[in-house]
Image (tube, rainbow over the protein chains, first blue to last red):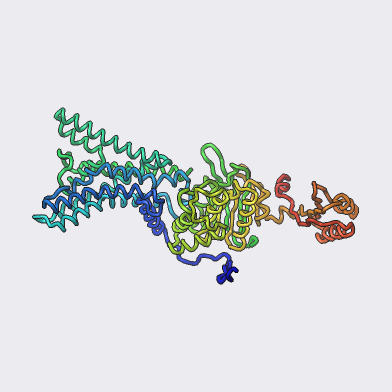
Length: 289
Length: 309
């Protein structure tokens, strides 16, 4: 015999919401946090977690090996300021994998009108996405740098700890994160298809790297050292490295140095401005359609 | 539940021209509380009107007010207290309905815990049960429409814009959706502006109907005015339909036989009880088996075929 039901569900009808209605700032934070979690695969399928987890692990490997080396031979191995340049391929792949996830589905499945019919504006939406992508890129780079620094402090190498270099690299990581996030989102937003977005970000990275390598090699062999150094500015990673050199006085990671002065900072700001204008124009068009 | 003194939507000489086409032409309409139907063929300017009312599209000229706020300057305030269900697909396939609706509630400014409660409540009201935890990609059209409706209601708006909510639904899904719209306007106390290109389905749920064609107002009046003149009674009996028709004609009623159904016209000025009594007496006297006896409103389509008054 069935036991008598003890609980009863009452249909209490429709209830109005009397609670708080927060402002745009709250929606902005919620969207940024939601996107940031998504960039690392949280709140998504198990398959979506593989790639970010794998890339974060690869980013941490050199730091772990360096700590082991420091512990064994008592000598510094990997240096902070060159971490981003050495690991640039991994950073580029992370960007290519996650930037399209942040923007493409909302365009492809036309979710954007639902955001825009709420207090969230186009600029709020883009700001939240940019913040999420920047923070994600920063975390991917800052995590191994911080691990390395913690390792250095624990191993207690002879001589003072390289605190200045660590903080300079963290500053560089912030700049790199903002630059890569702007470029990645701008490139990814031009196609509603995620696969094409991934391909276009990767293609952009390969293209700029190839151009840099070819021009640098050719110009160096011609004896045009100054021009060769300018050609390094084409690659986003060397551009940020040169900004790091100019602002924080770290050693250049390309072995040859960069053009003198703060020109690299001007180029950096110009590139970010172009990327963000492209992004805003793209969304103005998407919002009005 | 019926239109009261409150004005939800008011436009004045609203005109919207795109480079190639005029979407709205000097449109002046008002809509009160309750359910308002906006009827027009595809391309009549219904979606354009909704976008202007949401403050997302500037009008070329004229004014639009929503809940006593100006659509041109107070768009953000309007969007806080209205809901919008677009005509097109707008759901990401790889998240569950619950996650999606919670996220959209947060985008409307609800705190996270409140968003979760409201999402669960709203999904229950639109009739999504256990499947709300599955990814939306596997949903049927009817379920997708319910999710779209839920995201428009989750922040408990004062007014919702529903753009073609019955599009692509089978007859049962259509009935469910229409019943839901009726409940939103009545029991939920949320005013509704619902668009459709089918006049017939709106007569079942609307208090007020606005008809536009090529961006111009054709007619705007309460549902009662539309159907008052053409009230009728539909009668169905097992056998002997013809004898019933003859008998009713004999006592002076206007009847018409359509297949298995007999329609008795009720003149607007006469006492409606008389026609019902005549049918009842005729069925009793002839000893017929009554299958169906219902009040039938004249179809709105028929009303619109007449030149607008």
